Length: 106
Image (tube, rainbow, N blue to C red; front, side):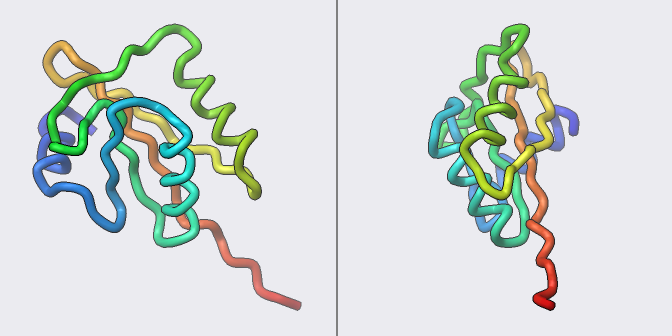
């Protein structure tokens, strides 16, 4: 995803498959779990509720730390795909999850 595509997604606003978070927090993991239990979706970290790009601070182990927290807190484990998208001088982290596969009952 490039900056233009991200801005188009932000302009559409939050919905059933997109949520904005200004920073990584417990609610981020809860939202990812909700998306995994539905049709999948994306959390845009670094975008506030008003749709403004506020950015996130990324250091060496930041993304891996987020992924580890998601895996530790969820069951079955959620392992989000994380893409860092630069927008001007700020960075937005796009965390995506797919819908959990439903296993047939034998």
